[in-house]
Image (cartoon, rainbow, N blue to C red; front, top):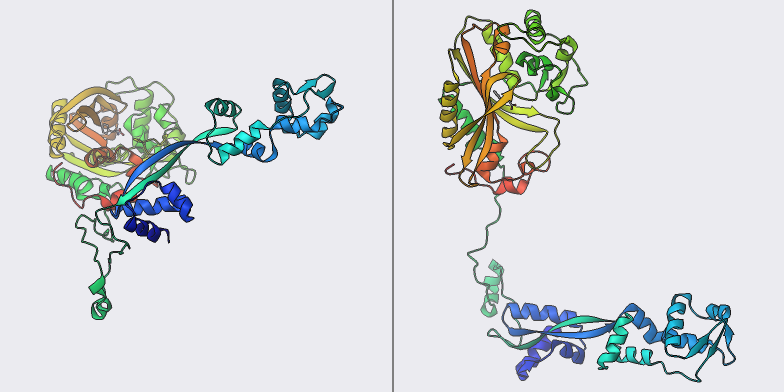
Length: 488
Ligand code: PHE
């Protein structure tokens, strides 16, 4: 065995100066020796030093000529003393080498070429073949010859790596494998007496605990925590158990015109079956049609022909504001009482998927409906809500939504990223939305929405949404991340 040979050799000799020579002399494959040396060195049975040698090896073409002779000599030998026609010569020599053979033989002034090819000298030596054989057997040749062979791509440099070895601090003539398992039988038989036991590795990671794992989106820290925040603030949860919605509640009731780009199939998933909704509150539909076409309540409307067919189309809801519009309509059917509502659920958008966008995600939505609310109330509620999530530095930027006026994008300063990041959208629902529902004129609604994924990604330091949700979710991440997070 090669390992025993190495250790045995070092028992008598000071060192093995060259693993390559050692392998050759003892009839081992050098690659095998290298692997053993690496292992022995790792356990410090030997002390190995790298040695490197640049050497020349034959290319495939070089090997061919070392065997069959150089092309120019092959050509020369194919020419009879009396000469030969070019065509006949071409037939006698392999076509792949003909061109190079002619040019080398001409260069060497061995032949003369016209229509007829003839020898100019009696004999030739195959120096190229001789040199190649010398290189092959590791003999040294002159720099000039090396250059010439290299230029013809018959040889190429190769770095040879090997080792020189001496005894290491743990040297022994034979390696003992340290035992890692210890059974009752080993104890009874007394095997342990000549065993070397592997030391405990207290740094080793334990086995992964098997069992269920909560997805970060469901963990106390994000979803339940948001739910708790809303409940503590006196909000009621809205029923969001319908992914399928009609365009009417998703868009029309929200004063979103029918030619709005968001209503395009590029942005919205429409249903084929059932493609339309069964029923809508007819008198309210009529008021919505009027406000789109001609306005009212102080508005000029959008001035276009509103189509019932558009409103009837079923879709996968694109935002949870569709649920808010249903809830506010219901509220308007009873004597008015102020309300605070929230929801956390799934929405769908027909978007190009990338590291921050998925075709389905979760929205968090909050709204407050009361008499005489102002933008100041909205800003106050947003500070209250986000500071409970640990985001105390907020900034607001004017924005546009068809159903809110004014509208504000919400930014929070991210201490880790050291920059402002957009975290949500908000606004006051327009009178064109609220008044057709039948809410009293002085009733205002302040509302905001954000994705559940955004704060989760920030909290868990995930930078690709596909690791968090969808079919490419990283199960390793779910198993490994902490059961609960401490702090924000
Ligand atoms: N529906 C909006 C969105 O999808 C969010 C929003 C909710 C904006 C409520 C204003 C008021 O981005």
